[in-house]
Length: 385
Length: 141
Image 1 (tube, rainbow over the protein chains, first blue to last red):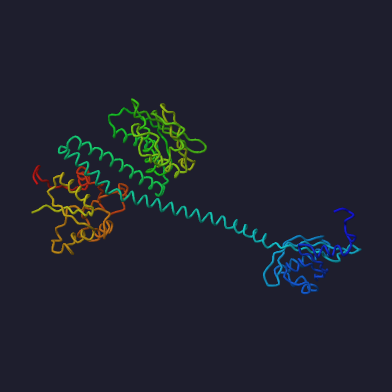
Image 2: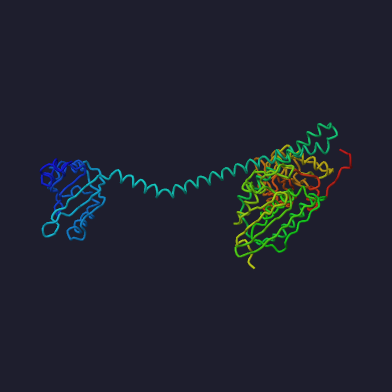
């Protein structure tokens, strides 16, 4: 707009009256005691009243009851000169009764002496914004509760699954026992009535049911490890290791083996579970040494400031460290049965036992050289001196 | 006079047959009485119900008790046996399908046998209880 096109009355009263009348947001001039002196159409539309209904009335009449105290404070502050303006969100009462959130801005119109004479108020509808903010606050507040609920749901589901797996494994015991026992009796007492092929088929049945039995035992052991109460008592880790070593040798008396166990390793924990742990680790070490002339395993430990470190080291076929992440997952197998690979539950059980004792189980290996399984236990697993 | 019976309380027909085979291998000359559940077992021991008319003084030499039974569970049977003066000292060996149950120690039984019952373990456990058996001569049926 060029200066020459400007209306002659820019800056005149008529101009400002037109401005106020045309404004899209509610505007009003309010007296020092809170009387609506002049209200624009936008304000009337916002509050739902006509110009005649508002003019001459006090702002208190359309202020929400809960805001009366605050409004009085603002007036006092403005009149005393503590503040020059107000910018806040305030609730009004619409003509039809509902609550209206409004963004209010109040400026002071001063007389020649500088004292407040009138207030110029601007009111903008903040209902939508306010609702959004309230919803966000509600969401945040309830977030913690909803997370807790979800976690509880998940835990309940997990427990159900565990119970189911436990129940199924338990109920499978009896029929597996039947197949195992009668196929064994066939083999031991009636093999003569079978031809070579029949005996071969019988052998396959025996092997398969052996695998089934081992899997069920593994599942039940895993479930027991998860559910049973952990006893905290001093336990002789070295003695347990010797015991397991003796059992392994007894199972294969012809196998040349040397298992050296560091004496004096003491741990605070559940003796039964610790024996199961050693059983899994030593059995693995034994199995993966299959290709070697001799089974060589070392069991050792070291105490330090953080707690206790225990290890089981073998010199067997080892595994590729690239697969180390899958090592402790149930049913993952890094070796086929020829290399001694079993059902893949053993390390999952071992890890669970270590975790229940507050520790961590890790492994390092070099293919063709051997593996070391390392148990780190916290200080509370170390017996007091 | 016939030797005292052995009472086997077992509901699983396969486990029953395997136990029968184990006792047969041991060539025991004692008759095997089978009860399919706890109620039948107590009926037999106290000569009532289906076994009314039996001489209650002729108690078995040993009770082999499966713990997981229909109608009346193993623990209830043991409790009933221990509650009566006539049967309080009756040797009871529990048959454990689950090896973990075998180390329980909470039941008032005299021993545990893992399933399937095998001749050697049977001999070990009963010998430890001081029980002596009459045997059939070899090859006699």
